[in-house]
Length: 391
Ligand SMILES: *Cc1c(COP(=O)(O)O)cnc(C)c1O
Image (tube, rainbow, N blue to C red):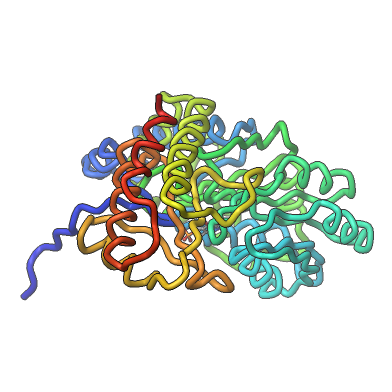
């Protein structure tokens, strides 16, 4: 027999999950009720309103998919695309490649627009592809590339999609709650996010939102969505406005209590304040890194405040450093992926984890672990450089 599982208390400063707000964990432990209980239906309506606030949208079809961000990604593609359709997919990191997989597995053609990992999506290349493929149904791109720490210009990309009569599909898994995002203002047609990044909720839920134009596409499909579970026509029967909600699947009741609490925290803070907080702690963190002699991969204008790609100095064993941080400081940071494996660390400052305490903790731990590896770093400067940003 094994005993109850008691996880260590970590600081989660990787690419997600991020530190969960204690308020969210407390909400999770409240008593479970039925998924058609009127009190639960009331909660669902509140979640929808809070998600509309977070996404800045009035889209009626706004809800959390009962599965992680990857399911939100899949839901968007399988609902909007029908076999034989063409989609333009931007790829400047790991998640663009996953979009391509989704498009191709749906029996569709993915026209790829590639940019280097670490660079923002090039608008000119996208416009060229849109001109060359007037039959494309949608343009899909990642707003915040978690694999590289790059922010692309979602507003300009959505405007291009509109100009060429394509649906604008956005991966906002890491952007929601961390950087400016305006679904209605920017004309985004379909968007998905995740609960465990800047919302600082537990992993396993994927907020999505579809514009009236996208809903029209879904409702007038010639063929059935190949995924029964993710078919929005069916999910709408449970999450829709009608007072007669019908059973589709058992909603994850307690995780939805948690999501409600996380969205409430965001609403109480205010979107603008949350975005400004992410920028502040990122600025302090980078000041500390640079004072230590470290550098950041991404050009300043396209850096994500919530995901910092830190270059691994010459001669440093990056995996050993991460295990030192975990063992000695209970601090998790992420490794590089793909072409950036071994070259960067990914330090998340997402949601509840975006705090002065975490910035100073991480700088201190990094410095001591680098010194332990005899790396050439400037010592005893990072923390004061970060503190000078806080003033
Ligand atoms: C984390 C992430 C996903 C996948 O989300 P899961 O919850 O891990 O399935 C998709 N896109 C981006 C940009 C992400 O950062």
